[in-house]
View: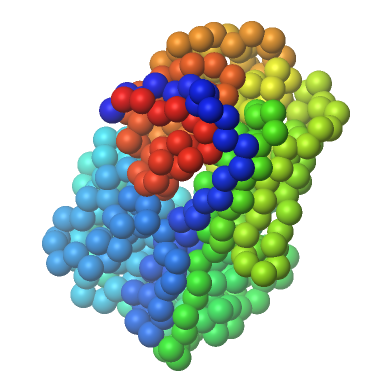
Length: 409
């Protein structure tokens, strides 16, 4: 599906939206619910990724296809490895079969897991025979995807001897690790995190527990971008908390520099984003090693505002749904930007002109579609394969209409 986007003829200055529950929190809780059935989840994400994960957990099939869902691939690899009697082949899309998983497989094998590669060494599909993992010590490089680390932590309390996980080197994406540990804590799991070693104690069962998922902060990023690019928009988003488990809540500080003020409401868990007049930097600089999922949004915002940006700490973006750094470079340059990328940085030069009528390719990546959508306030553009947003945000295009973007097939 190809969509044409432009600014609505009738400007909408105020809007209120309910944002779906966090995909990151939901997917972690789904694994924990499979291990501890007395866990109940409220405000769960309605994303494709979460639905794929839930379906996989309940599937009687020997072959489980998780399509493009990278989180599901990582979390399920650990889950099925520790599930006694399970015999599955875990596979995914062509792109998923190009995304390395050897680091996680090696870690699980060191705990005693029985995993073999069905095709290429180090990549899905994986043939897994679940068994009791009695070993409890493992070392992992600290700068790998946090999903590898979280995959191990999520199964840790169900292991007979728990887990002692040592992270070698400088830890990146720490907020996602802390999110996983906070959710474990809510279930009554005992853990200790000192220096670079995380020790998780075994837990046989949990009492009836209800966990309410906070709405997704990375989904909120597109509305931060929209307000930043607007003249005077105000958008209320629910349900968000002052104290968040999600690293992407850093949006509050990052976008204040770009002219968006965030107000938290105490009577309901909500935030209001308001455009304010502020002196913008000539070049916006940020290290996003803890918040890589908002890099695309920030890059497009800066380009739309006519300021340069220097984003660092982006080494994990090359192994996402697509090589996000390369994809950003290609699509921004279509619009007239000058972009330089390295293995972990994105540099966009200041640009005063934006090409009109450009078709943005999305590369099977939901965040490419959503990151570029707010630019419709500045120019007319088209989004190819626009339905890809359902991976994390199924109601995205309806919500774009509600805040003043004209969306046409």
